[in-house]
Length: 96
Image 1 (cartoon, one colour):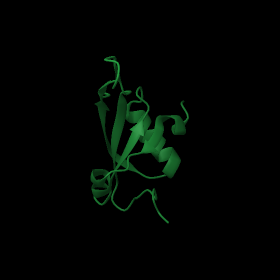
Image 2 (tube, helix red, strand yellow):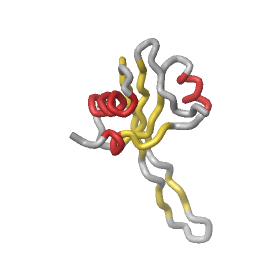
Image 3 (cartoon, helix red, strand yellow):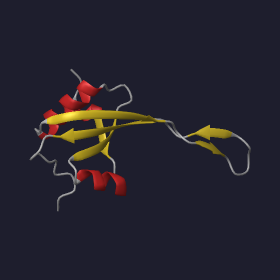
Image 4 (tube, helix red, strand yellow):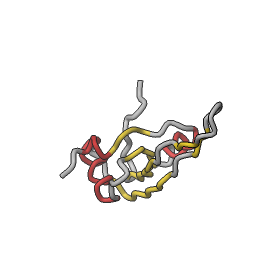
């Protein structure tokens, strides 16, 4: 089994993700090859919460163009997971 910390890379910090936290849905950047059952097991192992549902989305990296040269490159692709927790469970991500 993979290490759970290698599957869950980082939480997503945005206004939309904070609005979803109030509904019990947490957003994470995950490893591109991680599957939904692996993500669910990793969240359970790290925080000890019950996961109801996992949705994933693959985001294509933006194509960027250099200023002086006309060469193009791209930012890396990323994968995100929206993890819905059971009622009464929460993850203390940004607690003071």
